[in-house]
Image 1: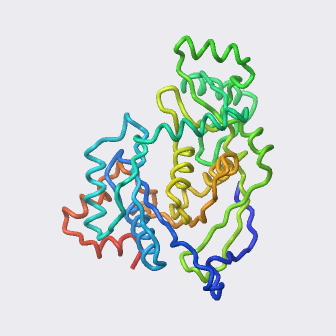
Image 2: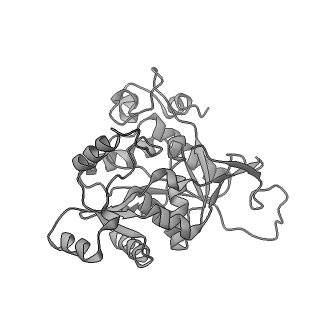
Image 3: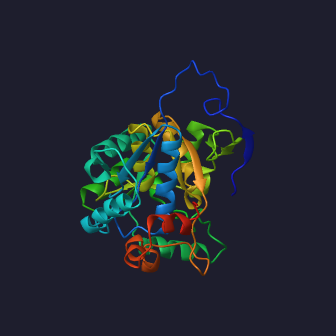
Length: 312
């Protein structure tokens, strides 16, 4: 479902806003995962955030989103620092690494659980695939905006005693947000989508978190997820402007629900165009031809990277 749109202009960025009311500097961030080498798409996002921070007299933060212990590696993290420094990007230190802040994410899970909005599900990925296949015999099973099937299980119907027994027995589980109950609590939500120019007219977009179903917010082995961590970190770091690719725009609906439930301020958002390869496909870390380190080895310069990323 495409976001509903209503035109709006935010007073904080509107030209002529009362200069006597001193606003704190805007805060931008770039938050890569060290599960592969950065490519042109990452360069576009990092440079855009860095440029906007400089243009607006703001701060630029680097955050390492390394909650996936199985895929994240130290050599990839080291390469992130090398690539960004080569591009001429300077960031504040210390760098926040998500793997060092699991306690903050556990606290958020507990707050949501106290509201009766979290439940554990115990199906494996293979079992979920089987359940989806069974349901699709009768018709199409809904998918989320990323194309993944919505949760088809019945774990929400388990009694508290049944859940506790499964967890105590050591069964793997995922912690899911009861999305229908969450939306009933928050009511309709929106977010402000801004342009890269403060003078541009902004849009107020409607959140449609129901399209995501009961999203996973944590697992037995990892007490968080992308959705939860990014919301908590942006709030704790005082991020005012989230500038990221268009492929993440739909997930903002989930983030707005979490912000509302946890009493967190909603930043402004800008979802920039993506960078595609010669065949028109979205860039991937598995495509080494677009990795910054490979382009650097072939003699490309930071100026070339800006041009290739469409920033000059």
